[in-house]
Length: 439
Ligand code: SAJ
Image (cartoon, rainbow, N blue to C red; front, side, top):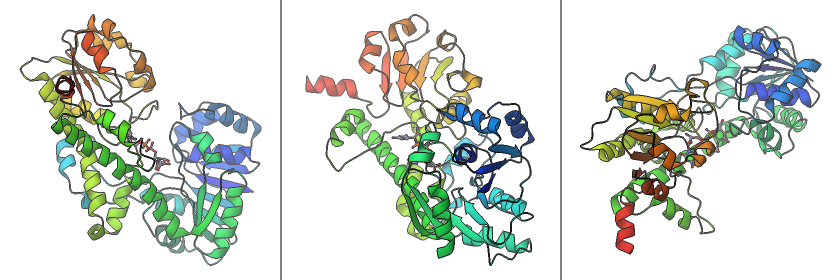
């Protein structure tokens, strides 16, 4: 089939590659000329994705995937553009942002509408139009359909479907092929055609449903994760209050065959988990108190990290903080909507120098020794695998004062204490007292 993928971001680009590998003739379209130029020069704009580079270069070289800024006629159109929420500009008013009510967030569907308008000149009867972007319920049969109709298109003979992507950043190429897929058509015919198309490149199960159910299911999955992380974060604070170590407590609770806590941390970032629950809240503000509370708990975690920092540094003059990790989660290079950077921003507001290290983010890929040099506090915010290898004794010789705040429960607190550090770990504020009490 001839396929036109609108949007060559984290989802659209790998998806276009996988479809091309499966034998489709694919045109990838992006509004950014710089992305198209880069790809045409054989360079990727997305890094840190296993297997993506080899795959992309092979389908670009063979011509199975071409890229352009303008769409062409095709059998299938895939909309894979961002759907952020309307929010603050930059981090200047971060504290005010963290106080904003959960019901004040609205989905920004401008990219979906723009991509739909862009295909209006080439779409025709018999085509399949699939929305892959995560969207509020009734976007496929609302915004997308209406935008084409407003452009004067007779939509009667066009097949519409929603097929949410569910890949985990960092493992996208594998998951695009192996994950189960939910495909919901606006009509039975649309569902059948869309399911058949996805079966041509997906090895997981492709399950048929209707468009609105598919839209909601995707939001339910990410909301489930957000609420679970909020519960872990709430227990982290309860544990600090009670003098229990949350990391040990979660490990023990998860030994139960039907309990599976996720991990506490400095907040929930990225473009999915921290956004999608708002689409449900927007659709039903009066029915979503649990979802709103979970969002609030997670959103306020950077402020809680600052409380732990204030406690750890009380009475000590702090000039420099060495921050480990900038990206929104472990082992990826994406630092957009990152709680680590929110905390770094709040730290900088207190007037200290903030030296950030992140091996996966170009802007912060500095030698570790440079950030530790003369630092008063070491703060771990993203649990990259490489930080397992940090030797606390070596760090002890580089820093100015020996204070450590670990917000991910990654570092071996005992080893750092032996190296002379005063250690604070999110979720186990009074761990030493607990050990003393048990002894
Ligand atoms: N986080 C925690 N504790 C945890 C797990 C995650 O604090 O136990 C934090 C991370 O550090 C990060 C944030 O949550 O800041 C989100 O990370 P994530 O790994 O949970 O999720 P994403 O945003 O990278 O990808 C999610 C996935 N959804 C689910 O697992 C239900 C992925 O499958 C979706 O395709 C993706 O959202 C999406 O595009 O919607």
